[in-house]
Figure 1: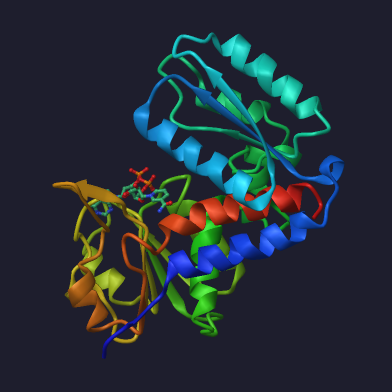
Figure 2 (figure 1 turned 60 degrees about the vertical axis):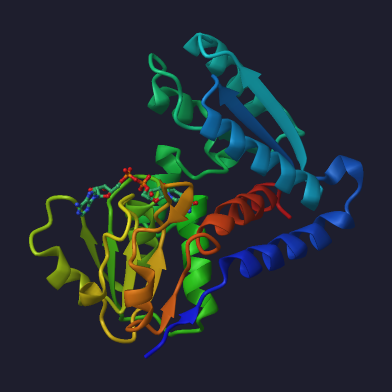
Length: 278
Ligand code: NAD
């Protein structure tokens, strides 16, 4: 079998086009607004924030950029979030992570109003996601679900194996698969005989951060393989999956780059419009 490639770049572009069309008919006053808070000078964070600003511009979302110095006191960050919570122009608030040392990430995220928590990281939204209620869904996992749905597979009842249990990818995507009636197994660094467990996955999601960790023998024939990993080696981006070997066994597979990556920002824009009621 040779897998069909799930083209995340194309799917993300289509989503952005759809959102742009929705916003283009709105008056200036009714346009959705996204506030982005960047604390400190982490170069990777600065790149991500610029990409988000660019997506806002493209779609017509008002972006409110707040850059704070590396040594900004926590009180200043919380005061800013309080102002943004009360602003009528701001529908989504995003605090770029990681925050500098000395800042309590949990306190900052919890200060965001759950109704404006565009990243879906607030404990209220996490709880709603797990209890099957309406929730703001975290962007990367929601983007992964869109990619899986693009295959048009009926996923109800399938075995889904998620490798990685982070709060931003592994756990929320497991919750979403469970909501969609998959039988979900979450693997992590202490899982015994991981290859054997991975082989059960009709859907296999790799969110580890280790290049080529998932080898061909871990793939069930016909599986849908989603590679979330972003690893930089020798100026080249690679995922967590040995793409060539996996593609020989899977029915669908995402490439890196061009798979999950572009979906994160497209989904952030979807969430912003949703929070604005558009
Ligand atoms: P993380 O470091 O928070 O979590 C990694 C997980 O992998 C942990 O739960 C750990 O238990 C598991 N793990 C580590 N070593 C393992 C091993 N030997 N066997 C089994 N499990 C092991 O990472 P994260 O934030 O979830 O990100 C994972 C990857 O996805 C990274 O490469 C990251 O860059 C990428 N990522 C991509 C996007 C995107 O938009 N495409 C978004 C978020 C993260």
